[in-house]
Image (cartoon, rainbow, N blue to C red):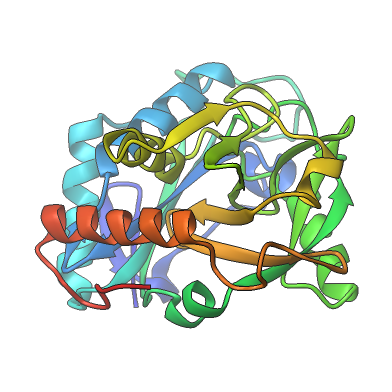
Length: 291
């Protein structure tokens, strides 16, 4: 397995992470996950835009340009050789010694980049059968719009849902649905699709952006408007979305069956449109078809 380490591609065993790297000590860094189809980095430009916006918000200098990073990520994918996969990359603020809470001088402390590429297939079974979710209080910090390495709140919410016997968590803050543990959350009611508006309470999803674009092209009404916890139990359909998830129906919330207990028609239409958009851009029809 090869790793992109700063500007070099090396064997995994060659990578050394310093004990005083701020990512290790503080979770001081950012990450992105890009889905690769047929060797193509899908919506990579949008992912990099989000990375740069996040870096600006946490006042972190990125030690490379978008063009340099894109070129190196493509080299990594080409070297590993498989066509379908997930590309994970992160950048920490760097190694600051001795340990100090204060942000270091970016001229003296350079960011540390790592990236890896692993095989990944579309989650067809989940798309066809749907998943279950438990309502869990959203107790995360108030900068969820930053794709931070600090994911303990997300991890604990997922663990709480799994302990209750569900596949995922749907997070609720002040009686409003925010998102799932690692995906955007959507509710369909009377033909309208609702999802929480971008802001500090949720991550501005790349897949979310594409779904809204596709829905509007298809004449499906979309409202970026938070729904209440109670509205989860009267929804006609629910689904989650993300770069790896794509679109996965939610068929059960707590002990309540959503709709008919099967993937809804609007969810299936959006899923087919999303797969078609991938096929158009990436030139692959793998797993494409009616769902």
